[in-house]
Image (cartoon, rainbow, N blue to C red; front, side, top):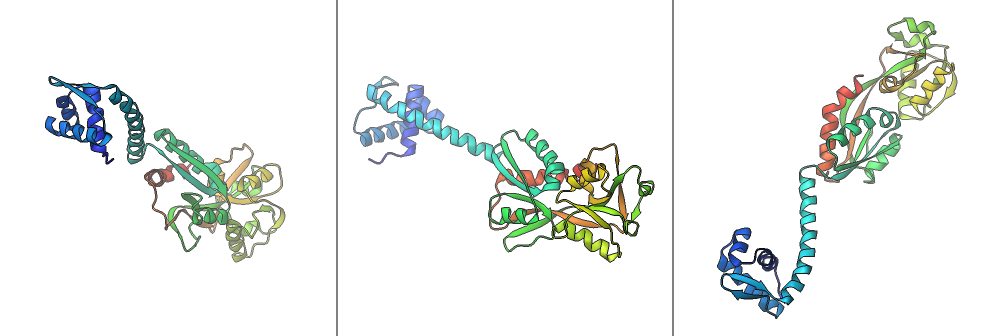
Length: 299
């Protein structure tokens, strides 16, 4: 039995419109072409589907039975078509994002929220991790988009610069350094400080800058997240150095943030797997991220 899709389409149209002429108009083919397709289908199934009465087609009971199955099948095909249209128009899909914790809790979550609002059919999943976790997540294809330092490297990932950020000094309002618009790193020598661990990617950048200026703070506490360091400072532990985006997101009436001299800067990038062709939804998110990142981190 060699039934083809065109025969089924002609059968469906004939059942719905009741004539070969109307079915042909719907399928954009001639009436004789419809009649030929129906005759071929009847030959293939081995039983009569229609009685020809004048210019009309009267379906047999067997035709009605077959049509029920055809109708269910076409509902599935229509749904597939809707999904395909949604994907093409960036209306559906899932984007999995993994970002450094300090960014995931700040501007990344904000941008994702804006993107979802404008693309209600796209699901975005956000996970936070350290630099090694971001690299592993992208390399293993567990995530589609990573946001981390532009210095990360791996044989299968590509880092595309997103924006430049810098370190800010966090201190209480009563700290003498709060009166300065820019604080030189040398002024931190001997000060009580809570810090990022040196074995973290960002911590190593900060410690390298301090050592270059021959600054030796008195370390009184350590934490792996920038927000935790700010909380310690707020409670009176001392001072700390954190990312500019954390400073923008941290709400406190008691902490002052100041830029440093020399500036301690780093590049932030989007990370993707070069062995994977990105989906339309993922590319739409990446485009939205790049177009809106400056406003998100300028606060």
